[in-house]
Image (cartoon, rainbow, N blue to C red):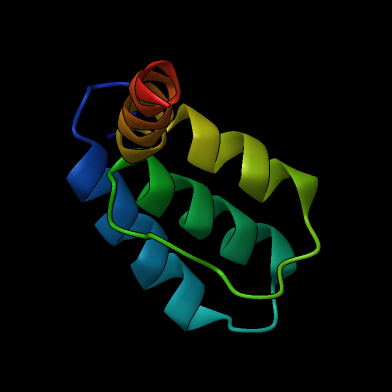
Length: 76
């Protein structure tokens, strides 16, 4: 679904897979990545994974916030 361009469906399928085996860290990581790509996840508190920071910066929301703050710096 991700490669077909349907990020919302990809996130839903990844979440369904995650719920089937809550102890599988790889599936959990993939689910979080898909949710970030679909802009369905805003924050994970106390995460210790560098991939989360990189993926959230690449999400649409992350790019919008970066642009907003870069415009704000020009005003101050």
